[in-house]
Image 1 (cartoon, rainbow, N blue to C red):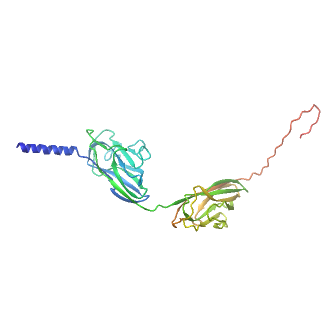
Image 2 (image 1 turned 180 degrees about the vertical axis):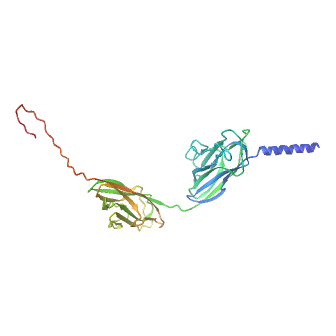
Image 3 (image 1 turned 90 degrees about the vertical axis):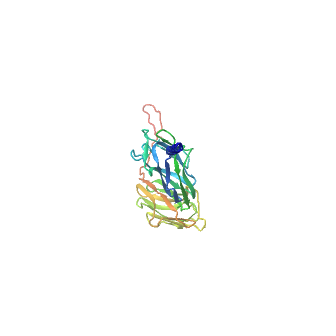
Length: 340
């Protein structure tokens, strides 16, 4: 009889110990993700066995060479079904890269504003966050201790019950990163009848094999004058068509198998105009009449980013300045004198 009683007591003690030691589970989903470079992946952080708890804090780590933080995309602060007091704004519950934690880390710290214990159904999402795939490789996205906040989960008795982590992993493939090139037309001011030249500059001009584009302007305000200052390998006057009023086209290519690369903010040519009448005339990149196309050494399309310019034409000044200067003279009363 005593042995049976002892066995029951031992079993009851073990059961109570297991209940008191029960940990909530925090899960990052999707737990397995495949992405290409530049893809953005949204992760949910959900809870299970979240019973009679009052606060939690933890960090989430990833490899910053493979993934980069984008944003906290969702916060469940609902009083009845979420985590009241959980906020993503300034001085909120989250510490994000670029703030007070280094790249590759995210911190979260929550406590119930009324210090009330809450229980939530399994699968309740606490918050979501987004990461961008920046390079090929594999990275864990996992719950972490310092340097972001240490892992701590407190129950109603302010006892730390810790958490059971279910982490995620991301595999980033090569993907396709579309290269870009920047073309910029400068601005100018000119009087009617005078000439002004605008710089056409490029940046990210790397391994470029061919360029074609159109530049449009108001032919009633501006008259094309010339192309000058050619500063690109193989670029010649014959690459430009200037016969149509209000339009200039460029069609250039190189025979260099590696394409052409120039430093950022290089002026590759100037386009010059004569002011015809007062007003503001935009000078813009266009697909008409020649569609914009830029290709690199691999014959791959390069995204064209164009920044337009303008010319302000001021009225001609038709007045003639006249200045009369009279010297001082001293004479006696009744004498005459000459003005030099």
